[in-house]
Image (cartoon, rainbow, N blue to C red; front, side, top):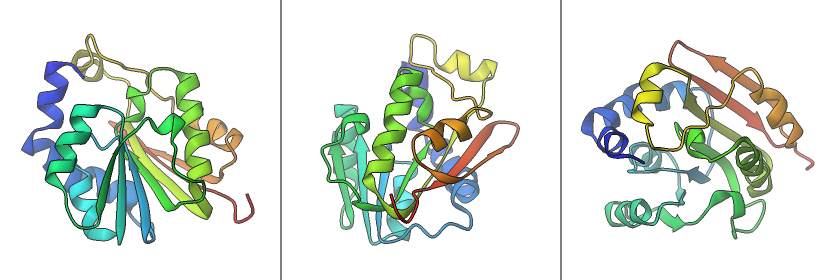
Length: 189
């Protein structure tokens, strides 16, 4: 992440936005289960809320410095792994749910995003849910991602991409700033 993006994502204001808007909208009406994986927690704005809602939370962060910083912040029911989720070494069918918040656009290409979708499918238990949110195209998004990775996900094509990865019951909702998605691994699969 570039300097501006790091400052924004580590700010108390962003934590407040995550706590009051992003997570309630993303996770409203969803039962996460006991074993939850958060992909790309960054500075942990979502982690703070999630660890209060679940029995055990695993956070998978590909940036070593962010993983180390998050590891120093959390305790108890949270495990932080420095690992690329597209090539996770965790055993399959390990999680009741997998979540990610405003991070898919940091995955370096559409192909890598599709690989991530397949990896999440593998990590979920049958009947498990994948839920999250990401940002829509805007001048602001472009500006804060100067000299940074920005591969926006098209909410129009996301349902087909998730279905091709094996998910069912895919739902994508859009507001003026972002989209949320929910998908389920079939009971048999």
